[in-house]
Image 1 (spheres, rainbow, N blue to C red):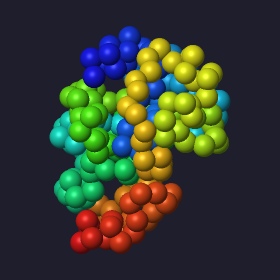
Image 2 (image 1 turned 45 degrees about the vertical axis):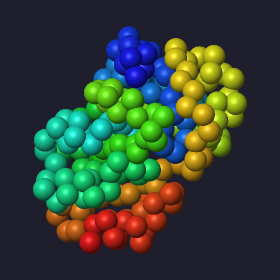
Image 3 (image 1 turned 180 degrees about the horizontal axis):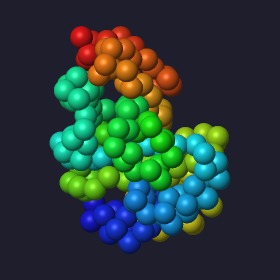
Image 4 (image 1 turned 120 degrees about the horizontal axis):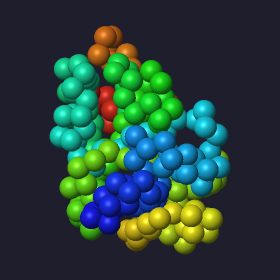
Length: 196
């Protein structure tokens, strides 16, 4: 956790283990770090990335503009293998490329990775693969160019290997509507149960 915090604070790009696949992380407010992350992946600059908090209380505190219904939904769904799309009412993390949409991740870390939950700062994150390539469930599956280009590589062993479900909650506060944009570990029935 300390090494990751130092890397992010210094404007570096890190490869880290999450609850789904290996990811790339950087300071979401550092233009140079965000540019490097996108260049390493070969990701088009117009494709947004999510912002990850390593604890739900930290995320809720950092986003005071969230409505009560949205907060209740996040408490019911997170942490977990979900990327939640929310209205970006305060134009937070503009370098993440989402504009009016904020992609939010709070991973459910296994015990061996639980120390990361004390990170205390958000990171911009994307999967540790070349743009359009397969996600990595172990370090050996990450392209050499990413491993050599990153400032820090954290080995978390083998991960589940299924990218997060993307859940659109942009109309949840106003109309109670939600939809799954990308299938993943959390299915519609589980979302329905969590949200009532």
